[in-house]
View 1 (cartoon, rainbow, N blue to C red):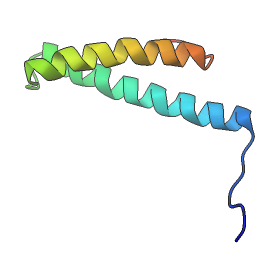
View 2: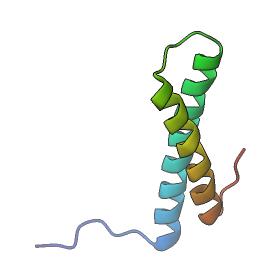
View 3: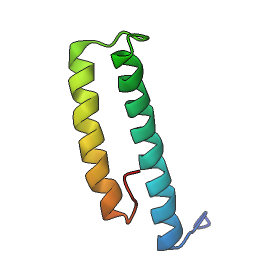
Length: 68
């Protein structure tokens, strides 16, 4: 059985960083729509999204990304 796909660490970090930024963008958009009154979110989801965004910002900075 072959090893499969192998990528270097820099590529893996860029893929991870891109995924984390996409997830943060999605959560931010959900909150933005909620505060504009265009979307309903359960109170627990609003709190969880805000907490996740903060955590993602920490992880993104660890991988060398910016929180723009």
